[in-house]
Image (cartoon, rainbow, N blue to C red; front, side, top):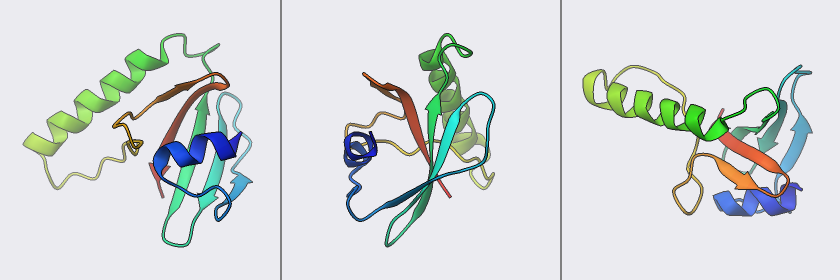
Length: 100
């Protein structure tokens, strides 16, 4: 699965280490370690969050607002993939990647 997801972000899955992160009850979460950066990869549970695209849109709107009104405010938002998407809709589910 990771070999299909990580390249969409420009990450080489052969050179990345992926380990389960925590024991979340809702979403599946992994720590992704590369030579230059660490990330949190999250598979969104769309049985619990029925409209993950709406949640992603809300996060994007909050980030846009904070970037303009409070540019120094620390707000961690998903990393965009190579196509500029912050939420991946794949055959295996919805994924998002956060910087760590």
